[in-house]
Length: 204
Length: 249
Image (cartoon, rainbow over all chains, first blue to last red; front, side, top):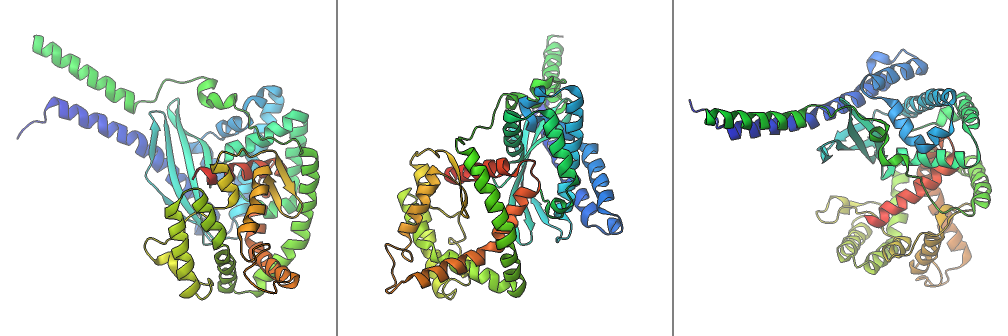
């Protein structure tokens, strides 16, 4: 049996390790999205309340990604306009709001069909995973943007139909902090989380 | 021994390469986590914010208290197929706007596809109610173009953001584009292709079109508004980014 030349062997090793570097985060994302949909639509969770679904979805997301990174990116430099106590409260309230929006927005609709396209390697530390979500017969293009942060691939933006979720929230935070402060933001977020009629229509 | 050394160096290099691509990069600080985005401020020219916010609130009331019941009733009494057919019909009527907009941007391919789609959908698709062109190779749907996009492609800047009563979010460029769309559309004055095109007909057409598109519009509006901390800012950003992307497409 012929042995592989060292150069070829090394190239294969480099190639395969680069491949696994992008396939793992893709697998993780696909699994996370599908498991989240299982919680909202699956037989396993028919009996549980919306609040319990929210807890399960949040646990699932937090087991794979750090939602704090997404929220801090959305807040941007406004982060430093809040004291540490306000920062903690805002993080928690926005997490609750976002998860609630996801679960309640999906609830009552047919399970969306999601197709993931080939992962795009933007740079050694950045990848993008395009997908198409068909919700109520309407296709929506969604791009997941991930970055290698520390030892993990972290979701750092979601772009739906060319509108970046982070950019959209950044606009809202920027507009808020031009006239108001962290305490006002907390009041606003608390009001939103209590607003039942909004929750009925809330979608992400 | 020399050979062994060179082999060792070679394997060390390979190991380094493998390590670089497989192992995580060393832990980073805040700047790496949040990157240049920390300094990035979302800037949309909004000198009319006070006026815009009032109009936004009035529109919000009108959409959710006047339009939504109409949209819900329409969606309830109309089978999905009829709803879709009505939407297709009105979209087909706007072919001249899409044709002219493609031509003004020098997009001959787009003009050709739009023309083919119009011909197929108007004839085989019974006045555009159905869209058989969707399954004809080379004539699949393409993103629609309008005069606002033409102005953007020509380098006209978006100008100040503005919220118009009933019409909703826009900017100076798209407002001019809206006027241009109406001028290009032969079903609307001053270029009406139909004789005796009196106001009753125009009102009936505009009303029907508004009702036919209302369920989708209201649904999208509520989606954007529902998950927002500040719906006005969210809408402003969403509209502006969406239009930017449409121009660059």
